[in-house]
Image 1 (tube, rainbow, N blue to C red):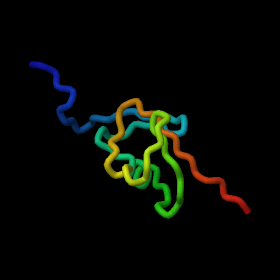
Image 2 (spheres, rainbow, N blue to C red; image 1 turned 90 degrees about the horizontal axis):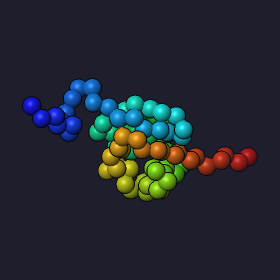
Image 3 (tube, rainbow, N blue to C red; image 1 turned 120 degrees about the vertical axis):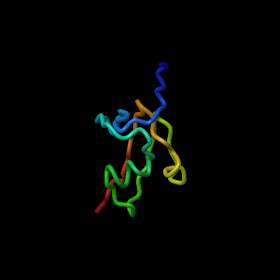
Image 4 (tube, one colour; image 1 turned 30 degrees about the horizontal axis):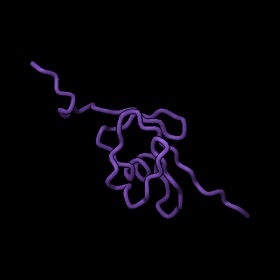
Length: 81
Protein backbone atom coordinates (compact mmCIF):
# COMPACT_ATOMS: atom_id res chain seq x y z
CA UNK A 1 0.00 0.00 0.00
CA UNK A 2 1.58 3.32 -1.02
CA UNK A 3 2.12 5.98 1.60
CA UNK A 4 0.18 9.20 0.99
CA UNK A 5 1.50 11.99 3.23
CA UNK A 6 -1.40 14.28 2.22
CA UNK A 7 -4.12 11.97 3.57
CA UNK A 8 -5.87 13.44 6.56
CA UNK A 9 -5.05 12.15 9.99
CA UNK A 10 -6.52 12.99 13.37
CA UNK A 11 -3.10 13.81 14.76
CA UNK A 12 -1.45 15.38 11.71
CA UNK A 13 0.51 18.39 12.96
CA UNK A 14 3.31 20.64 11.80
CA UNK A 15 6.08 22.35 13.72
CA UNK A 16 6.66 26.07 13.29
CA UNK A 17 8.79 28.61 15.12
CA UNK A 18 7.18 31.77 16.52
CA UNK A 19 9.61 34.47 17.65
CA UNK A 20 12.25 31.79 18.22
CA UNK A 21 10.03 29.34 20.11
CA UNK A 22 9.00 26.02 18.49
CA UNK A 23 5.26 25.27 18.40
CA UNK A 24 3.25 22.31 17.18
CA UNK A 25 -0.03 23.23 15.49
CA UNK A 26 -2.64 21.47 13.31
CA UNK A 27 -1.46 21.09 9.70
CA UNK A 28 -4.29 23.19 8.19
CA UNK A 29 -3.78 26.29 10.36
CA UNK A 30 -3.95 29.72 8.72
CA UNK A 31 -1.90 32.67 9.90
CA UNK A 32 -5.08 34.38 11.11
CA UNK A 33 -6.04 31.35 13.22
CA UNK A 34 -2.55 31.21 14.72
CA UNK A 35 -2.53 34.89 15.63
CA UNK A 36 -6.02 35.32 17.04
CA UNK A 37 -7.02 31.87 18.30
CA UNK A 38 -3.87 29.94 19.20
CA UNK A 39 -1.77 32.91 20.37
CA UNK A 40 -4.90 34.93 21.33
CA UNK A 41 -3.46 38.27 20.26
CA UNK A 42 -5.88 41.21 20.55
CA UNK A 43 -7.50 41.91 17.18
CA UNK A 44 -7.45 45.67 17.77
CA UNK A 45 -3.66 45.78 18.16
CA UNK A 46 -1.35 46.59 15.27
CA UNK A 47 1.61 44.35 14.52
CA UNK A 48 3.63 43.10 11.60
CA UNK A 49 4.15 39.46 10.68
CA UNK A 50 6.97 37.94 8.62
CA UNK A 51 7.17 34.30 7.60
CA UNK A 52 10.59 33.06 6.51
CA UNK A 53 11.75 36.71 6.35
CA UNK A 54 8.90 37.74 4.04
CA UNK A 55 6.31 40.21 5.35
CA UNK A 56 2.74 38.93 5.05
CA UNK A 57 0.14 41.67 4.55
CA UNK A 58 -2.89 41.59 6.90
CA UNK A 59 -5.17 41.08 3.90
CA UNK A 60 -3.48 37.70 3.35
CA UNK A 61 -3.66 36.44 6.94
CA UNK A 62 -6.93 34.54 6.54
CA UNK A 63 -5.79 32.75 3.37
CA UNK A 64 -2.11 32.13 4.19
CA UNK A 65 -1.73 28.49 5.24
CA UNK A 66 1.22 27.76 7.50
CA UNK A 67 3.73 25.12 6.42
CA UNK A 68 5.94 22.76 8.41
CA UNK A 69 9.18 24.53 9.35
CA UNK A 70 7.87 28.09 8.89
CA UNK A 71 9.83 30.69 10.83
CA UNK A 72 7.35 33.32 12.01
CA UNK A 73 8.31 36.68 13.43
CA UNK A 74 5.63 38.82 15.09
CA UNK A 75 6.65 42.42 15.75
CA UNK A 76 4.46 44.63 17.89
CA UNK A 77 4.99 48.40 17.99
CA UNK A 78 6.68 49.76 21.09
CA UNK A 79 4.21 51.62 23.26
CA UNK A 80 5.62 55.06 24.09
CA UNK A 81 4.56 57.13 27.02
